[in-house]
Amino acid sequence: MNKFISMCGAVVVAFAVSGCASVGSESLRKETESSVAQKIVQGKTTKSEIRAMFGSPTKTTFTDGGLEVWNYDFTNVSADAISYVPIVNLFGASASGKKKELVVLYDTDSIVKRFSMSEADVTQKTGLFNN
Image (tube, rainbow, N blue to C red; front, side, top):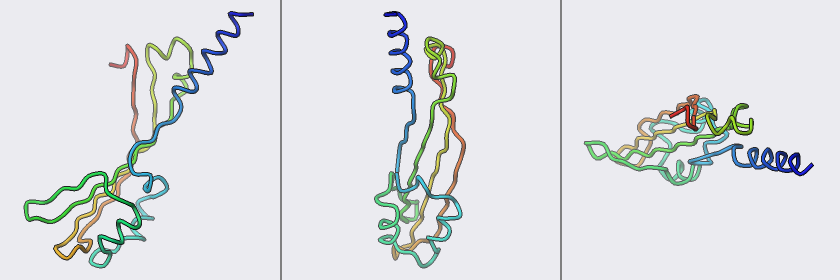
């Protein structure tokens, strides 16, 4: 009976440790390429409006010409079924999900010059046999 309780405890810990993980700008969680295209208008939407919609950017850079670029990204992954198999997951586990990225280029007047929203499938692998 003690062995059974220990095994159940290990399974519960495995579920808790290898569930879901999200990283990045939460404001992109529910966004899609089409929903962002409805919110941002090139040549009209301002930097302050973008900040109000999506918060502070994950990264800010500048072009060679001095134009400001804001990057937002969000990744959400969930453990694949093999990750829940005790002992097996030590040798090889994986998680799958979506990565979203929004890039906004501003003109010299802090108006959106161009933007791009993309979504891609991602997979993360861990364990001895996935390195």
